[in-house]
Image 1 (cartoon, rainbow, N blue to C red):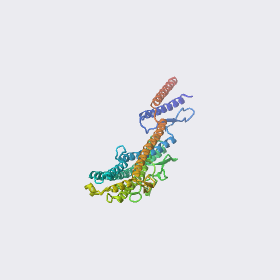
Image 2: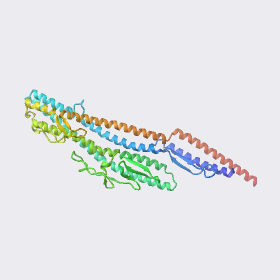
Image 3: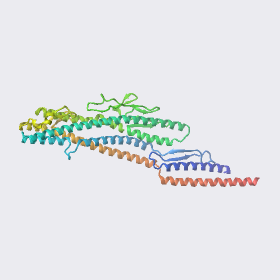
Image 4: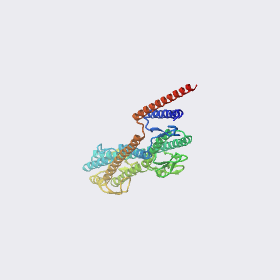
Length: 445
C-alpha cells in the first residue's frame, strides 16, 4: 500500500471518527428525551484502498413494537378518559355507608311511611314522610343534573379534541413533507422521524388509528374504521358543540355530528380520547339517565296512584314534592290503610322497560333503586380496572421499545472513548505519513 493510499484511508477514518463522535455526543445530550431514539453511523468502503467513506445516520427502531405502542396509547387514553368521568359520576351517586345514595333514601322514605302507619295523625310523622320524599326528589334532580353536566363537559371536550386532532394531522403532514424532501436531498431525516413517531403516538391517544409507511417514507394514517386521515394531504375533522345538554339533547337529532371532510363519522369514531367522549356522551351517561328516569317515573306514577299529588313531574329532572305539602306537611292525607298502601307501592313488583344497563322486567321500586346503584357501582369499578389494565399494557410496550431504542449513557460514553481513541490513532498515522513524505522530499531535493 502506497503512502498516498495510507493517507487517504487515514483521512477517511478520521472524518468518520469525527462524525461518530458528533453523533455520540448528540445521543448523550438527549439521554433524558423520551422521544429521542439512539443514532448510529454506518459507513461503506469506496475502494479496496479506502477503509471508509460516506457515512449515514440511522435511528434505532422496531416497527412492531412501535405499532404496539401506538395501538396501546389509543386504548390507554380511551380507558383513562372513561375512568375519569366514571369517578366523577361515582362522587354524584353518594354512598351506601353515608346513606345518601338513592336506594338508601328510598329505604328512608319507606321507614318514614312505616312510622306514619303507626301514628297516622302524628304531625311529626307526616313531616318526616314529606321530608324523606323531598330528599328522594332532590337527589333524583341532582343526579340527573350531574349526568347532564358530565355529558355537556364531554361534548365540549369533543370539540377541543377534534381541533387537537386537526393540529396533529397538520403537524404529521408537515413532517412527512420534510422527510421526503430531505431524503431526496440525501440529508439526515432521523430527527424528523423521531418527531413523527412521537406525534403519531399523540394522535393515537386522541383517536383510534392504523398506519403504515409508504415507499417514499411517508406515513399514511386511517381511523380504526378505515377512514383516511392522512395521505398526500391531511383530512379535516369538524364539530360544533352545543352550549349545554339536557336529557332530551341527543345524537342523532339535536346534537350535530362529527364530520370528516364533510362526512358524518360520529358512530365510526372509536379509540382514543375522542372515542371515549362520544361513547360517554351518547351511550354510557344517557343509559344512566334513562335508568334514573325510569325509577323516577315509576315512583311518581305508583305513589300518586295511592296518594294523589304527593309528587309532581314526569322524570328525574323535574320530580318534586307538592309545594303545598312542603309548605304544610300536616296537610298530608293519611291513615293506616293509606300508609300501608304506600309501603306496598314501594315493595310490590312493577314493570320496567330496559334502560341503560338494567334489563326489562318486574321489580319493586326499592329493588330497582338498589339495582340502579349496584349496576352503576359495577360500571364504575369496571372502568377503573380497565383503565389500570390498559395503562399497564401501554407502559409495558413503551418500556420494551425504550429499552431497544433509548440512549444508554454508559454505552455511549464508552463508545465515545473508543471513537476518540480511533481519531487519535488515525491522526497520529497521518502525522507519521506526513513525516515520511517530508523525509522523501528532503532526500530528492
